[in-house]
Image (cartoon, rainbow, N blue to C red):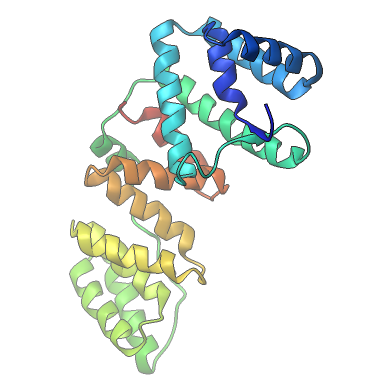
Length: 254
């Protein structure tokens, strides 16, 4: 047992009595001296006692799916925790797992909802600033666009945001609002394109908002794997929208 070890795999097989004799001898010896492994085994036992066998299998599948969302690198390249050292990394990984377990356990008792129902529940129009003032140049066009956006005339707003971006395509404020305006008129592909552009720019103040509205777009269009990956990223990165992302993953039909 040299190098790196995937403890979760051995814990599952240990509880299922599926270890070979050499593996069992090693695992029990490791348990005697490894407090982290003892704690992880205790948690898994308590989890198994709280759930039925079918629920345990379902939970494992969901945890694997979340792990793939958060860390899509091929299994053979990522894997396995070290036996010693790097405790900060182990603690961080454990925190992510506990968050995942929390909302998955909640999903067993909370009523599920469809993606469309969740979109309707959590989508809210973006609130534009009311104190923006300019009287000249392209900023004046942007100001007019904000007024039309605030008046819910999203097509007029889009026309004006387009003028702004034609003049200066680096305006991520106009790009974000272009995406949200397209959500409002149910032009999902165009919305996705603009929101992804804000995210890919990676140097502006609107990335969290773009992530949130893009994830909601994926809900509405039924692209649940993409939506789940976005919401999972919000959770692990402690986004402003973290709590809402957890709530949605709790309630999403599974």
